[in-house]
Length: 332
Ligand SMILES: Nc1ncnc2c1ncn2[C@@H]1O[C@H](COP(=O)(O)OP(=O)(O)O)[C@@H](O)[C@H]1O
Ligand SMILES: [Mg+2]
Image (cartoon, rainbow, N blue to C red):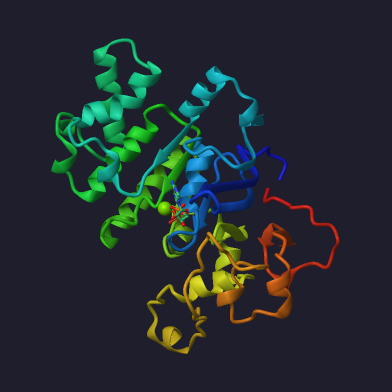
């Protein structure tokens, strides 16, 4: 597609030092790009590196290696002012709205905080009016202005978190498991709200989730992570109907299907064993120790994350194109 990506990340690594001798490879060589106005879903089990990836993109963690290019600008080449402005354009919504909201601040102050930091209003009346408008956008009312986080339900608190993320009119939002802590009935409402806001404002969204069930609805494309690696990336419908990576198949098998006949007859891929430690990941393909199709080569060579079909990327020896060229292609 001709349009330039809003965000491009190239071979990002984030390693944590566990002690003097050991590194924990939380994110390892991840590359992808997101087009303006696109929603990219990122899924994978707990501990696979989704939050670390999000935080590294946001600049909350210093990356170990790799490049982050936002709107054509390499983040490493930005000076302090440019970085400060960049932080206005990128915002994050967190999984647990309660933990991420100061319990002693009123809704007014919580939502206005980013505006205070970036001085985006002239006086208190403007500040208050802006917060009232934001509350309306997320389905809350101005009667909530002077209340405290504990007075709200989980879904309402997440709405406060969303209003706060919108306060500076960002272009790009990373929503890190925004619905995982909510009741199932409330999950859909928050996803609908995010999708509505995304469409109205032309936002670019990275939506992180630990399973595939809600992600399809909101995402144009979905990436699947396992043990710090991006193992598959494809348009949502393609990923759901025609997954290439055995890990994606296993995640899809885990989603219940409402029709009992289909549910009874479908093939399931059940994974053996536990997720290995990211401190000592398996050689070759990191998924091989749990993969029902593992071959000899899987222990020896790390599969290259490459475009297997048009727009459909996977890192799996079942689908590797035989080539000496190990250039990493990134999703566009
Ligand atoms: N600040 C940190 N210091 C050390 N290890 C971390 C830190 N944050 C995350 N990790 C480790 O990195 C891995 C990925 O964690 P995380 O990104 O939180 O995964 P996810 O969000 O997919 O559940 C885990 O093994 C986790 O223990
Ligand atoms: Mg997380």
